[in-house]
Length: 146
Image 1 (cartoon, rainbow, N blue to C red):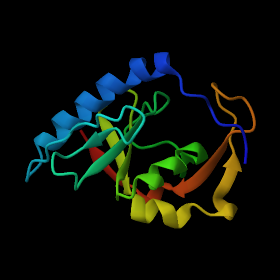
Image 2: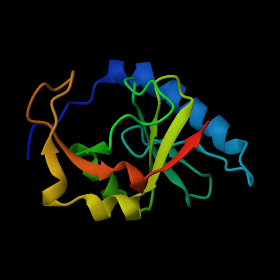
Image 3: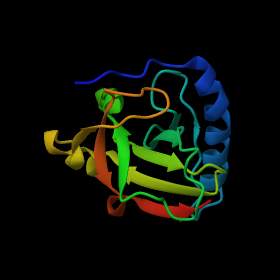
């Protein structure tokens, strides 16, 4: 297991409020509408329905500037495996730079790809080496315009 990026409160405050607002607003317009609220556990899964049947973990991807997600794989951080400890099915949702597109995958589908073979080290701006991610095929996500 590689290095885990430490929780960054400043980064969270930069991306989370807008991500949450965009997602809550978008799904409220769906047919049928879905109502989501902030999870009171600020270290838990980001959003939940009032009845607790729908849970959503959000991740803003500032590098995703185009209509289509630019890579054949979506990197799911190994450190987010903890989300499965909550005992609920959830959606993992990535949001584009300008919050105009989203990719969604159910946790039941996501976990199928969380294998040793799909675990890779991906250097990035915040952790230049040794952070592990699972390669999840782009085709496993449902893509939508917000």
